[in-house]
Image 1: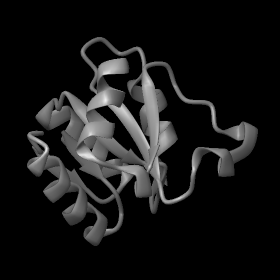
Image 2 (image 1 turned 135 degrees about the horizontal axis):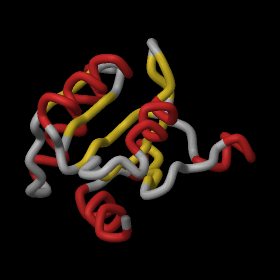
Image 3 (image 1 turned 90 degrees about the vertical axis):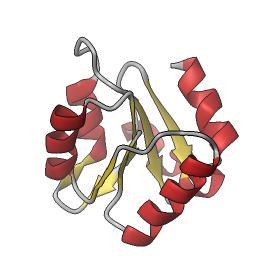
Image 4 (image 1 turned 90 degrees about the horizontal axis):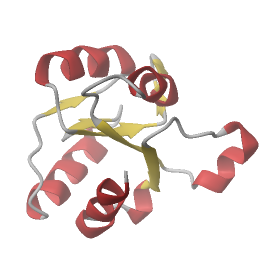
Length: 115
C-alpha cells in the first residue's frame, strides 16, 4: 500500500492504522508528482490517495491509473464526504472512496475486496 496525502500527520496516522491491520505500507508521497514516481518505482498493489493534493488532483492520478494493465487498486480519500463533491465526483473505473474519518483497517479491506 502506498499512502498519498499532503499532511504528514495523516500519513503517520494512516501508516500506523494500516500496519496494525496487517497491510504492508511500501511508501508515502505528499503530492501527485511524487505519487506518480513512487507508483512507477514501487508498483504497489494499492494506493490510498487523497483527492486534493497541493500539486494536482488525486482524481487525475486515479484516472491515469484506471484501466492500465497491472495498475494498483486505488482508494480515494478526503476529509470531506463523497456527497460534498456533488455531481462532479465520478470515480474512475476500479476506484473506491472512503472519507478520512471512516478509515479503518476493516473498512479498507472491504473496499479493496470489492474493487
